[in-house]
Length: 388
Image (tube, rainbow, N blue to C red):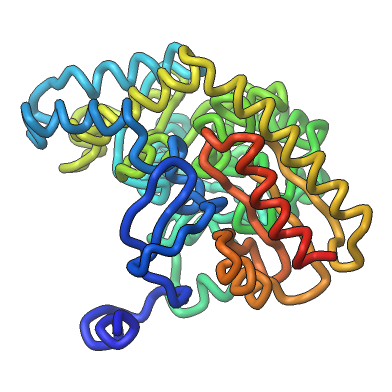
């Protein structure tokens, strides 16, 4: 029924599974018939606190009872509190709130362009990396060098250049005095859970300093505790000029954020803005998430349970002829297999496990950060049955 209604009323932009979800609790979701599923996709790394988290639910109810929305012409306590927490637990100095990861990357591109223009009218070039994904609006899409995403929407924004991931010589051939920024993911999520090499990243950082180009780290998927630290860049020893984040920051509420150093803080009133960005509900959720991670022990839990999950997967790999590689950090894991992944995900769903793909042959596991070892065992039992 829902597929027919979608065809009648909605634009055909999603390839959906034939499943209607109605409610959730913790790491589980339930369909319209009451069937239970272990959620190891968590809304594509969004439901960081799982479903119906008591602290989050109570905080949102309290805020709804007071005020839902005002414009950014006025101050709100939730917005300032969330910004304070992001600055306190990162190495950045300033925050701008928006509504999504794509919006955060659009804003970061604008920030970089203004920074460059203040240095020279020709300092407008931005380098992004092949295999990366930064969003689907025109600016973010221009930074996402994949032909299948770009081809129907050209011409895109000018002055974007693409370098091979983990190939420092290729980026050296692109960067010059007219480069205002390099944007990259330290783990390419949509690209298949591909990790950047630490030596490579440090070399890119050095090149950015040499050419006075801003280093933009896209942490839309890797950020907010997903990899075992608030932001993944800290595990690679980097000091970015700009960090973009979203997804898990709102634990289900739409929010994005741009963090920057004082050096990159070049916006002035009127340069950028958003009606809904930093709204009361989203920033209330963000503060709950950040406190749970950084003050209430959730980060340490992620570090422990992620090691348990990866160890279990490596044991399956040792017995499986289907698994090519298990890779990732924290609770952002890719299982590359030697066959198309979609049929396997359908079989997982039939057995009560929800996972997602990253490309055509990678199972992507992005469970809620609250997932327990017992729940890991439930998911592993299903994966083991299907992969051995």
